Length: 515
Image (cartoon, rainbow, N blue to C red; front, side):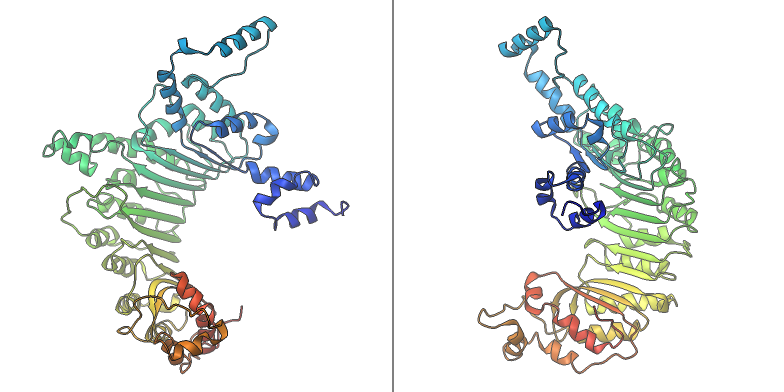
């Protein structure tokens, strides 16, 4: 058994759960390596506790440090050290610690470093992070923390190395100015995710709710914000122009990103953009800024993902421009000839706004994901009618739609309007025979009825399975569908039907390939 090749053991280890793998470290060197990789591949530093102290000590070993690939950091531990130092004066050091320090002096031993001050923690983290040579995914959350005398920038920036491929920043505007120096920012990032916050954005509102300064704080139109976006964040992104392929920007609250969009130069490799836009006015600022950015990237962009968000307190007054109108202004005269994938998600994304996006950008897409909201039959009709108006409907290959009420009429509509569709995934909230007759709750399977007899039982006890009866009468020989997936949003529906509906629809569509 022990003479098996190393590759065989590695293959076996792929099927061993992570919770079991660590107990197999002593079996052989292959399991030891896999267990160590599993244990130290992803590390997280947030709160100063015994676990963090053990990881700091362990990662000082280069053999362990080289295993770290994914790193998450939330420097709240720096504030913890400062708070502890204020609460425990040096004069209260225990008698035991004094004897330990005296013994170390007498024998000439170097005392172990205790992370008692902010300087200690910054230096210790700097040593650890500077010794992580193989980190490829780096996640930093640095917002919502009161400023401290000791900045975490030295150890946070120590991970910026040439082999870093993904950088995710959940960061406040002021911290962007500290962390992202345009001259020293990493230059090999392929994927950049930004969550931009404004710490204490409304502090001044309580003092002057009707003043000009309060109005600017609400809408983010300040020279300080514009300066950070245009002169710190934009140059740091442009520095990645030779490697950046994916860019995600999410505003935690309404903020004018127009200075950022205007300052961004052409990124020749950028193919995927994700925008998470607050639903409160002014959204992400002047729509002309987003239009300039999209037109500048029109020849490289292959995929666009749009989401509507609402994370901050909804205290912003209603704006004069609706979300759909704002999107229409931003996408006016924007042409992206090579756009192939369009994703519109979030329950907050209005149907009118989705139709605006489809009308503007639906000419060339082959893959459409429309999820997050419940889409009635009439909504799906309007979506398909909007795509038909673009005269490129025949190009659509993949559709992910949800949530929906699955009815025979909906299947008829998709088959008729999308004959060339090859892959369909539907997130199903409920199954019904008609849009006007549908269940108020998922069916409950009687405990005495086995699964093979379930459909026969329900044909006489509920109307839900009239859907199955209707579908058995239908056939779609001209539908080119090869793959069909039904995902139930309710586990009761899943328990009730299992894979039966997928199998039933597969008999209606001859082109579906058996799995």
